[in-house]
Length: 49
Image (cartoon, rainbow, N blue to C red; front, side, top):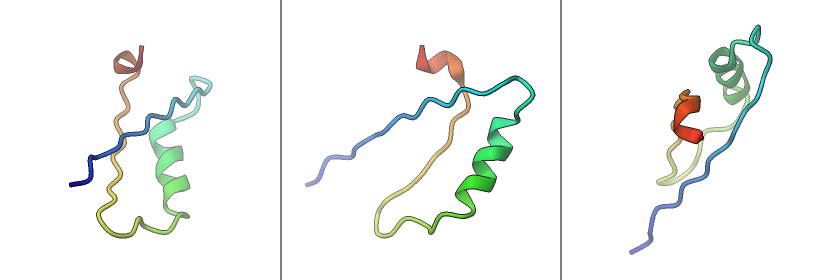
């Protein structure tokens, strides 16, 4: 059986930028993943340190 893979992406922005809104807008322009690929966004900078 295939093992799941995880990719983490760190996004840095000025405080004035609403990152979740920006990511939502950006992702709305990308075709949805095919097959068993799933995407989750967790906005929690403490878990990345």
